[in-house]
Length: 190
Image (cartoon, rainbow, N blue to C red):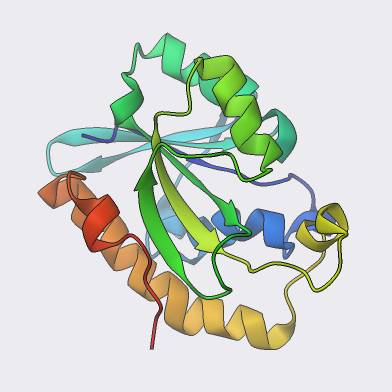
């Protein structure tokens, strides 16, 4: 069962709507967002929620995406969590914009945040909820992930992608995550 959900993103108003911050945008869109009470812990913003009889930890690393492993690693070691109890929510270049999906383990795809997680956790074997941002038309990947979504893309995320992703997110806590990487490997909202 998932016990820690880490939402990768960059802290600061100037990054708020950037592609690299899609996980934070997702979290902010959730129905429970206004009820969350954050504290400073594990080099990030930390809170917990109760779903059923289970306590779930939410973490927003404040180390910037590329150093996310420092923050997540501290939380994992403090709570003595198994790697199958971690869900990393992040942007994904290899999925088209608007798609999302769950995956266990896999490559890093050039994602420096995932590389940092591998370094600090000693493995890449953890659950992921990936939000597709698509690939840039040019070779400047860093510039692309650090550029904002346009207003039309934000509308698609908020009206179609995030509501469907939120339903699957809660489902995994009530039904268990086993099989999510098959059932929800790649979802394209209508």
